[in-house]
Amino acid sequence: MTSKSKLGTIILVGAILCSNYAWYNHTKDLEVKLESRSQAIEILDTSVKRQSDYVMELKTDLQAKNEEILELQGKVQKAERISYNTREYELTFYAPTGNLTASGTVPQVGRTVACNSLPLGCHVMINGNEYVVEDTGGMSDNVIDIFVGSEEEAYQLGRQRAMVHILN
Image (cartoon, rainbow, N blue to C red; front, top):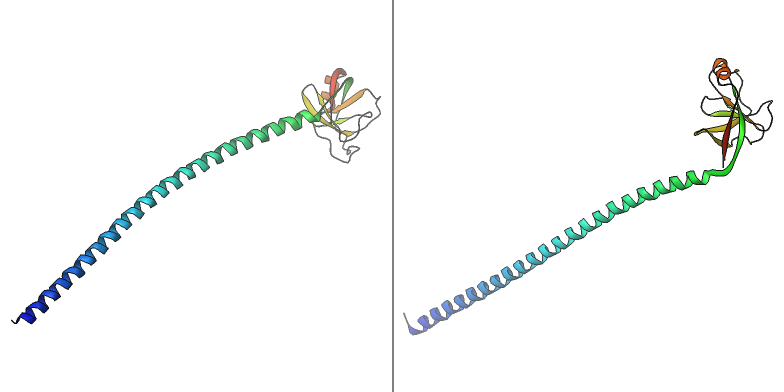
């Protein structure tokens, strides 16, 4: 082999080695960058999970607060319905006649009362039970007539006096 060809071979081998070295360094740089980005992604994933957990906690807290608010609103609405207009009435009882009430409804046991001094649709609380004034009748102004299931029951209950809370 001539010295020119030896020199050419050496140059070629050197070029290949330089090329391989450059490729090796480039590959190492890419691996380092990839590792760095993988770590950054892990950190972001952890951060996103923490934030997601926090958001779920906030949603749970918000839902609990909403339920509390709804419960309180119900209590307020119920309290607002109660008027402090309470007075004593004489209670009488009436049984089915087959007729509709003055408001045009079928009377219901445990719901319907008749009264001339209160407007139709007015709600009243008598002995812890809520009734609706749906009928009128031939009674005086201080009487509330409560609808019951039979004449026998009406006779048994007779006449009573009770404090009646007039609800709005």
